[in-house]
Image (cartoon, rainbow, N blue to C red; front, side, top):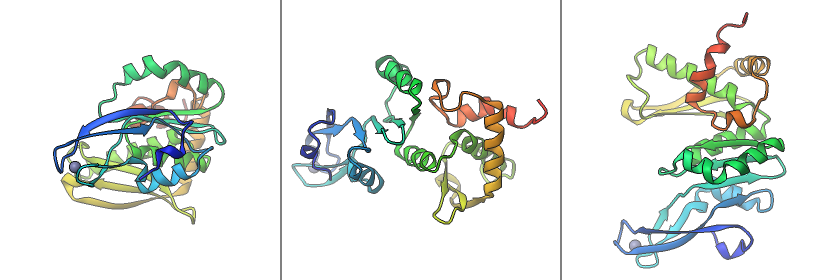
Amino acid sequence: MLDLSKYPDLPKEPAAFTCPECGNDIRCEYISLALVSEYPELDDAIDDGSFFEVVCPHCKTVHHYQQGFMYMDKCRRIMIYVCNSETDTKKLMDSIGDNLKAAASQYYIVRIVPDVYSLLEKRNLFRLGMDDRAVEVIKMDIKGNLLTNGKIQNTDTLRIYYEVDKTGRHYLNVTDKAYGIDGCVDVKSEMYYLTELMANRKLNGIRFYDWLEVDEIWAKAKGGIFSNPSE
Ligand SMILES: [Zn+2]
């Protein structure tokens, strides 16, 4: 669990929830702007989950509690807003949209993601200088294959995260609880670089405000243009 008193200058928000173990109310604070360039240990805390830990003062149970927060790396110029389950994107844009646009205009990579796993995926990709648009197009293809091959009937519980390991191997972590899928799919790195090349050629204005949310919906809307190189 983080000691929030170590971060007096980081903005925090109050939160309250009922302990599922003992039923008592828990009041806490969470960091709403994780400045990892200033506090690199926050990156580790997000990785190992301690960033989200809240201890119930009554029964001492450790809970994993995630609210919407901004991940910001000023050195690498990365801003990723992680939504919580109730985040309304429109309300979010009304409240911080201007900040996001301003950051994008200063050559920040700005993204809104639905969960912490997506944050970690994109953070790791951006650190490697990779293009998440190409990654989303590749993920969409793999989803299509799983559906076509009858491995899954729908994508409701399907989760796919792109990773590159230390040896430079590209792969996808694919899990689907409903269909008992839990494994890795190798991606030829050439496939990534080809898709990236296409993305750069066909979609100028990479990583700007137009593409705040680069996800499956984005890939569906834009992916089609990748299939016809002659256009
Ligand atoms: Zn409790």
